[in-house]
Length: 74
Image (cartoon, rainbow, N blue to C red; front, side, top):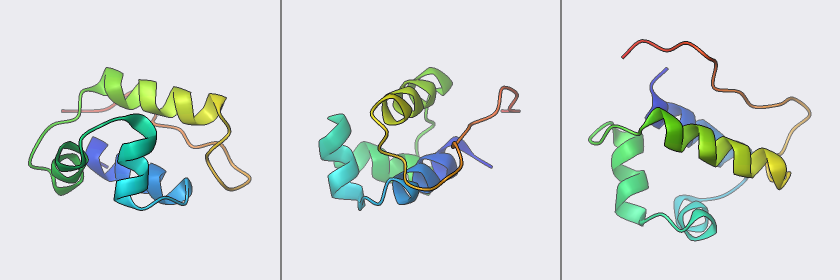
């Protein structure tokens, strides 16, 4: 699964549309759109920071914890 797909999945688990997600994180809409479309590569550390914030603020909906996984091939 690509990092852009993980962002898309996370956004959906948070129950937000793309605009709400961007406003919540302060990330430009076009950047998230490009990540999700695979036009721009999302840095691993940024994905981890986004996940950390969502987990700490308990924004992720559902009974299981969303995780990225430690190993990913580029």
